[in-house]
Length: 253
Image (tube, rainbow, N blue to C red; front, top):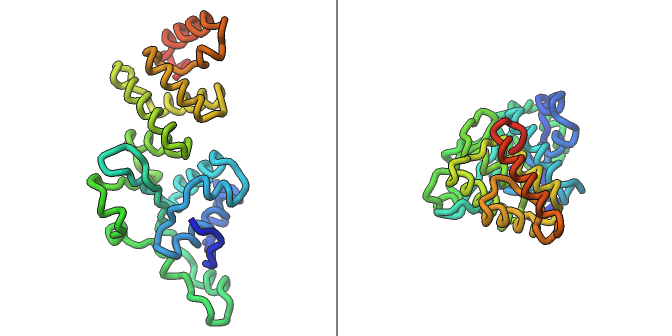
């Protein structure tokens, strides 16, 4: 996405004075309003915002989730036709009331720029007919703070976890594997899984190998690669057995 757009960012009072939002979450909201100015929605990735503000992807995810929970934005995930592969995430502004005087004060008195009032109003979802949307066979599901659809929440959780498409697909395969062995994962269990992967390694390639190792061996959880532990293989088996025994007692994922 092209950076440094010359659009004005608008942060209404409801956002500015929301004590549940961090200062940077409010700044991010303003950035989203500027990017929405062009087409009525924003398609910037977590990596784009992370690079823009010099923070980690997880930090951006927290900002976005706080804006979703506050009802200020909503997101829609688009998938490759007939697959679970995420093609694009779109961010829309929710129907936040913006004071006209705020916008007029933010815009210079010279008539060089167009007041962004209309562009910052949330258009009807049914009015979007972008070419990419027409090609999808399944309806796009808008995720907001009231959505309780477990399947969509899990997809968003995995999508937010990493921009590495191969890693995302292997995570989905592990979730499907758990479902096939009659031990489906809850949303909380998936959060524990992702956190454990982060503790085991920072390398996305290694995370992929770890997940494949668990699928290959029929393990319900994830463990260090065998070649990395050498003589500690017995400890891994003991840990695995202990975790499997306690899994549904809520002690592990």
